[in-house]
Length: 446
Image (cartoon, rainbow, N blue to C red):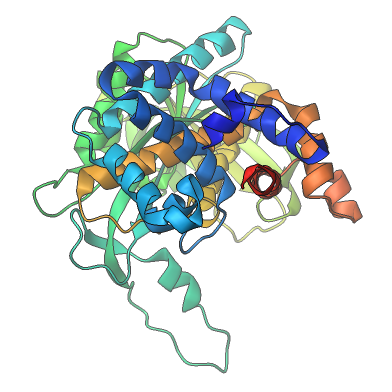
């Protein structure tokens, strides 16, 4: 439908000009992957693929955003919703393509962006993160396994005087999610890889295999100068072994109760931090917690007891105001010799929060937890298509700032100093695009 509107553009009004321009940008973004799909699929399925991208942008609903019956109503009109649902089902059920097709496409785009960043003298960052897709009331779908519910943890954080919540973590059906985002300091991220996996059934996958395959993919691309950024969940000897095996540079937030070699003897990290005196102090803005704090930073040369021949650097970050609060430890394979290099590593780790924001956007705005598909591979295809939509939004925000400002002013105008001084939020862009395409759909129907 949307591809037909774009190809047969005969009327262009005030309300449809921006929508047609948006479809042109989506057409340019997906042109390469549709040309590759043309070799594998029927032209009608490729047309459905483009229309599905536009419909996901249009239909903004958290609980039903990816239901095929809802999407089919926008594809062929709500009077012919079953026909549209069947078209989308035929696309997802086709055995001629798989979710790995989109994974390879996103990775190749990331390689191109990495080459561009290196040519400009900027350090590419691969931001790693883990999450879960929770399916609380699902039991029979393929690939479901046991996951810890972050939603239940948030909802059971009661205030004093209310019902006492359970102390143990709550387990629900779902599947695991590992994501890698490509970014650099001072820029918005893009999607590099998205992997959904389960720990049960015939599609059972070990988390180490996911990490190994992604690192192997980066190693075979022969791109140098990329820095992998991890949170504390990856702070273990096995992860170090994998990174050293594939000769990758890394930055990991390390745990405190671990021994490292310092000046020829194994010491706990807290003892190493006492010997490393602060070398600089600076006021830093924590935008996640909306606080401004002064921090002290220090670093020391260390090595891991299992890999004594590999020189590492431990960066110690202390909050100068709260003396009783323990420092934050960052372990990196890079050599730190100056204060600016140490602060660059700190800001690099703070930039890793973009991956957590990405997971949140998938769950709230793109309704990644709403699909009701029986079969595992069909679900992976749909979620891979959602990854393309998210990458398109990020690219639009990164490359078309003036046009995005016009779009926000026209379709999602907000008042107040906070909105005038804040940076462009992705959520407002998503809302503006949805309203913009709604105008086009209303004026082009009938």
